[in-house]
Amino acid sequence: MKIVDIRTIALRSACDPPYASAGGFLSSRAGLIVEIATDGGLTGIGEAGFAGGAAQTLIEGELKAMLLGEDPLLIEGIWQRIFARTRHYGRRGVVMSALGGIDMALWDIAGKVAKLPLYRLFGACRERVEPYASGGFYAPGKGVEELAAEAEGYRARGFRGMKMKVGRNPSTGSPNRHFVADAELCEVEPEEDLARVAAVRRALGPKARLMVDANCAWSPAFAIERGRALEPYGLSWIEEPVATDDIAGSAAVADALATPIAGYETENGLFGFRELILRGAIDIAQPNLSLSGGFSECRRIAALAQACGKMVAPHAFGTAILLVASLHFLASIPNGLVLEFDQNENPLRDALLREPLTLGKDGLIAPPERPGLGIALDPALLERYRIP
Image (spheres, helix red, strand yellow):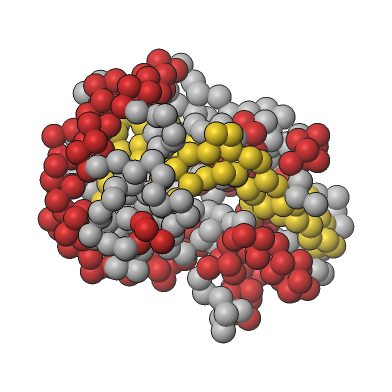
């Protein structure tokens, strides 16, 4: 069996109304689908990191030539060849985003060949995974009461936990937040952030998981100050408290706080996570399969995390393809913690699949049992949201 074609489909959907984190305003959601076709009639699908369209250009303009004619089941060889041949401009960033979609699609083919769902092909560790509702963004007119109502809605639907945004503050001890677009909109004082967290904790109840995400906005000193103020609310983790590359700063925060530190979705690949893990910058690893080299690389990251006694909770803020891939990934590793299940309105997640994922009455989700990723995409939706 040989690879005969590689296709990409770029998608974009408007956010109406827009919403914000400390890292910026979201006015649209985008995704990049990778399809790899074989002469055996099998086609694999994956989701690459969008990277502002750069990943599509890289796949179509350069990486496609490396793949045509190759055996799609030589997945590790293909991965390592691409990584090696792009080392002068790769190793992080857009190359890892492109590899994420390619690797995901190759493993989808492998699962179809083996007639096994991917989590079982990898050696299943569990049959169901606990998701958490990922939401709690800032938005115009969205105050403490509206946020609490959002949290109550998640609890009523059966979610066992929620992640919310913090850190969109006028002063954070760091310039990072103020370089993002529309930085002045929806700002709140740190004490209002505390009120928001307190209201969500009351809405969820004392036993539910509650996580906060600062999107790299704080300085280490400010993160320690805010982390201590947040300790009464029993957080499961504080996500990305400081700049991704401030590994020493993140380690200082992790050392100072009782609350676990999670991150960093903005890091790429095994070697980046090696630094975060071995230097004590994180307690929980959060690789993104689309941004960090796909199943192959993220399974290596998970193995390193396991060897160092760390749990893994992958970042999964994308289309339905990334969500399902992350579900298979978590179900296959021994140190999988929880699944990020984005709850913001997004047709690229909610309507992309012919059979969407559903939350069980027990608050858990089971991976699809069909071969590979086990999903089929809605062609009408692809045409509706395709970027020309």
